[in-house]
Length: 415
Image (tube, rainbow, N blue to C red):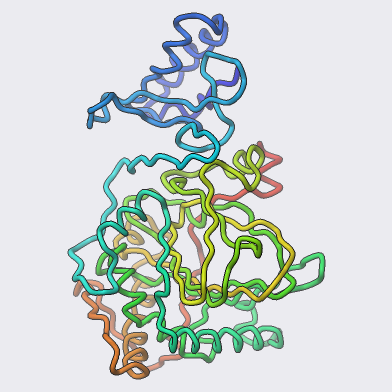
């Protein structure tokens, strides 16, 4: 019988661990059809403890108190009646095809201030859906003229990357991978300093910044900007993963703008809703379910559509026969307060990153003077002073990154 990782049962002190080990050792020796096992299956206490990978806290009907929580553990297909567990890290036991139920985080997500409403801010219903499911699709969100400029910019970024020389200071920003068909380019990092202003116009648009303010509050920070793509003929898989794992006191999300159609039969993104609430065991998920875990959805997109995804929601795309070019621009946003609390960057780095926003606002207004402009309401303590060297401001390297969750060959060996 497999007992949930009892090395994770305690958090407050070693005495709890010792008692838990003894109790679980006794349980293992009990007959599986005993009354005690049947009761225990439903009533493992979780007060002060951390839930196991296949368990979730459950409250008595009508109760709002965490003090009344019990640990409800998922069950696999084995006949064991005493502590049955799935070797997959979902928060609940699901029948295939069902939608996963949601559980709120242990602490309320902070947005740091009231948000002024506009046609481009998210509604309360949209924010609620995002918080519960870990993703949200915004259809036909980007104006056609800006979309066209971005598509043209993307063509230039790829062409430049394919011919960049090793002595170019931005050589490392163009990323390549070795596929069975040969060496292919798949990513461009730090797109703002790559000779095309369209990415900065996009950043300064209300279609982007109002969304960032809706989810991160007025002190949002643009933390990443890149383009990821699959060239025609490149159908390599992007394995299940979580982009970054964090304490979840604040929202961190990716803004994914699709420049080309993405179809189910052409490697469209798969998302497992409601997996964003904790670190997931990606190796266990992959080994048990492959590309068909319970509740998985396929996100088909059109040019100009935007996918918002929580950086902790599990997502990926399976290997397919490479078809047409598929390009996606990714911007990540975090609250300045979140970075100061959780890292991995410091106040100086936040200030440099925030200098991108006034540059982007000015560029968007220059190109689209008759369009609605975003009113930036950042707090005075974070408002940056922009230097006169715009080219210097356009690239703010990271140095370090927040750790994500994925399954590599090394992970499998350690399991």
